[in-house]
Image (cartoon, rainbow, N blue to C red; front, side, top):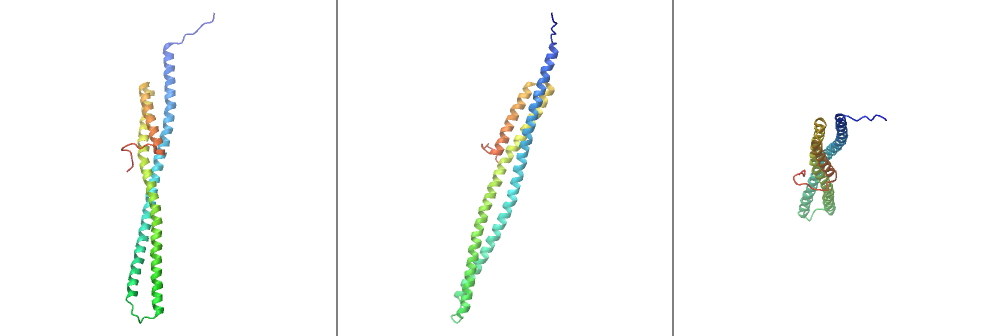
Length: 197
């Protein structure tokens, strides 16, 4: 009859704990990948928010320049209208035509700047929306990163202490962090007190 070797119970327990440690290490690596993705999302949201803000500042400065030009042409037009109204009848018709042509030119320029400023304002509103959207995304990524980092620490503690409850807590934190990161990318749900405004 062949000899059957009965495994030592301590060895079996050690192997099971070793297997637990390997599984936790693998899960921790997955959590670390999630952390990297969340960090990337947060960095991109911050970068896009800053770029939008810079472009927005430029747009509003451009808008203000158009408004100033519009007002200058309006003032020149109104002044010229008053001057033409006060012209004596003895002014030659050719001179009056030149002034009226200049008056029409001032009116056209005033309208052009008015139209251009409206287009610039529309673009500025789009940039405001992009800035606000990225500003809203950012806190979700911040909290997700914090939770994922804590989950990695809890997983490490569970390996060292061979504590399954510590690992379960780490998994819960990682799950919550992953949901927050996903929401940071999609903004499907608005969580109170987490908006960027």
